[in-house]
Image (cartoon, rainbow, N blue to C red):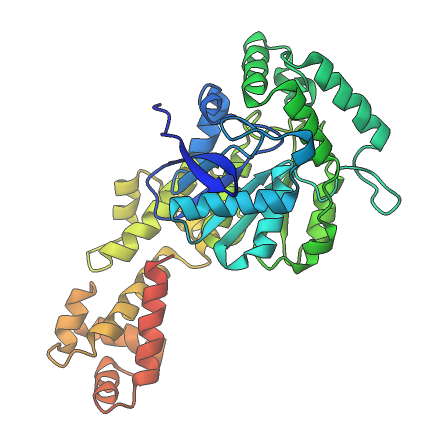
Length: 419
C-alpha cells in the first residue's frame, strides 16, 4: 500500500512525526512500545496488515514518540518522562484537528495512553492496553517486572548488539528463527533510534510508575495480554485490571509480545466490539464467528439505520450480505443485545415519533415512510412500544402534552444514528 504522508506536530521545541490514514469518521490512535519508525511500519507485512485490521472502520493515527523514528531525538540531559510524552500526544491531536479519539497503547505505550486518559478524559472515548504495565521494575510493593540489576544487564546487551535483531526471541519467539523476520526487525530497530538514544529511552522505561493514577481513570478500558508473553508477564495486566475501575480483561493463548505475530481472531473481534459497543464479544453461543462475520454484522446494523423504510427480512439481509441466517440472528443478538427484527422495529418507531410531530403527516403516510405496508400493523407496534396509539401520540404532541415522549423518541433515534 502507499505510505501515508508524514506530518509534524510541534510540542514545545520538539517536532513529533505522525501519519493519518483510513476513511472512518472516528479516530483510533496507536501508541507504540519502546521504539518505532513510521516509514518502516509499512515494510513489515504482518504489522501493516494488523494495523489495517484493527482500524478498518477508523482513521488510524500513528506517531513516533520523541527520540524515535522520524521525530526529533532526545539526549541524556533531556530524558523525557511520561507527562512530557502525554503532552506530545496532545500536540499531535491538536495538529491533526482531533477532538476525541480511542487510544491503543502497546507495551510501554500503555503507560502513556493511561496517563493521557487520566489527564484528558474528555478527549478519550476508549482505552485499549495490550501487554502493558504500570511499572516495569520489581520492588517490595510491586511483584512484577525485572530487578534493577536485570534491567542494567539487558540495557548493556542492547547497546552492545544494536543493529542486530535484539530482543526478537522475547518480542516474537514464534518467528525468532525466521531469517526474513530477523532482517525486518533489525532494520526496524536501527531506523527507530541510535544506540545512544535507545539506551536513554530504556532508562526512561525502567523509571515508569503510573500506579497512583490507575484508580482515577474513568475511560472505558479493555486490557489484553497473552498468557505466556515472554517479555511482559501477564501479572502486569491482572494488576491493571484490579486497579482500573470497571476495566475488562482478556487473556489469550500465546507467547508473542507483539500482537501482529500469531494474531488471533478473538483479539481482533474483541478490539472491534469494544471500540464500537464498549464490551468484549468473542463468539456466538454455538461456536466462534470469524472476524469477517463481525465486520458483516456491523455493516448490517449500519444498513438498518439508513434503509429501515425498505422491505427488509432476515432472508433478504442474509442474501445481500452473504451470511447465513443463523449467524445473522445469533451474531447480531450477541453483539448488540437485541435481535435484528427488534432493532429494525425500534429504529422505525423512533423515526415515526419524529415524523408524527409534522401536522401534515397522516398515520398512513408515516407508516409507509418508516417501512410498514399496513397502518394497522404500524399502530399495533407503536402502542406495544409506547403504550399509546400513533393518533393519540400525535394529538398529545399537538396539544403540547407529549413533549416528553417526543424528546425521548427524538434523542433515542439520534443516538442510534451515531452508534
